[in-house]
Image 1 (cartoon, rainbow, N blue to C red):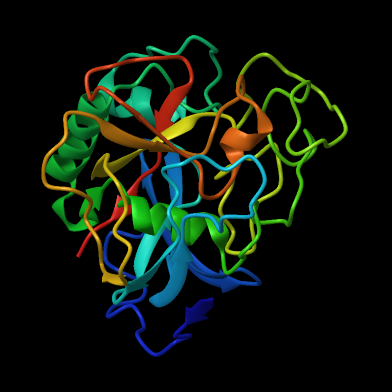
Image 2: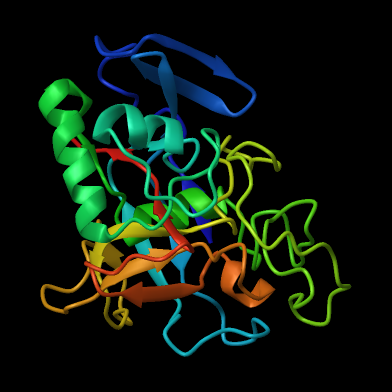
Length: 268
């Protein structure tokens, strides 16, 4: 199941006042902001209903992926890439990343660091209304209307995803293991114009980690209590199974690792 209410709920203002450039292409609507020469684009994700988690017969699934129906009643803007080192540095004045490169994702970022970045950006330009995506928004955007283990189908290799190609998914053929991050637009985007939702770096979500409900839910925000925060997407060092659309991880909100970065969304 994947139902998108195409164009039934359109962005109230398009373009918005903060946008430096905007348009529509084969992937849909987009807007971007530019700050001190560094640009970040966002893609419009229509409201809709989908099955979050994985079916019981999905190979190499984990036990915390109970499949359940989720409805997102509001469309949202999702950054088309993880936050780059260039954007982080121009806002925060330093670069904690292990694998340096201005177009690579910033990593060694805790959930708390990501929140500090969001707060600082919103302080500079409140109308941006930046936030981390919810876990449901993240998976919805990652799937881009797909129902398979990956947005491209049942299998991946290193031409599509930056992961440990020596440890492929579900008996796939081995492929390149780069042993480091790559530029955020080096590999193909999904059908909604979003890059590297699979692999490269794990991405923080807003939610606390916990078990999924069995019943259908509307606009879920995650559990109200848990010490850890959700990570999604897999990373450059992980097996193929960790890069699946339904794969989940979690970490202490103060924890930092060269596997972990984040992606921005826009709130309402």
